[in-house]
Length: 83
Image (cartoon, rainbow, N blue to C red):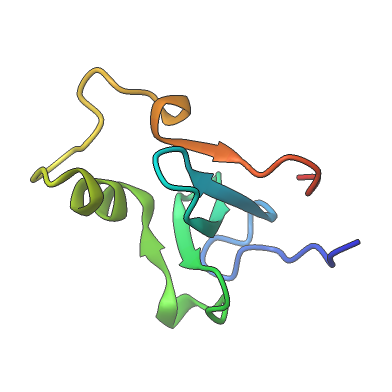
């Protein structure tokens, strides 16, 4: 079983494994502060990205990418990895 890691950016939640629904690209996410790290990337403050920025880039929009979308439309937890 993978070792749980506390978010280095906010210290308020565990890092959880997620993936993009469209293509299965995996990443690690703090669901408290929305910090994101790509799979295989060191989970440290200097490498953190914000979920909104990554989603906006992937959807090709500027500003808030969500509009009428919710997280479940775009990302999902990876089953069987706890959280």
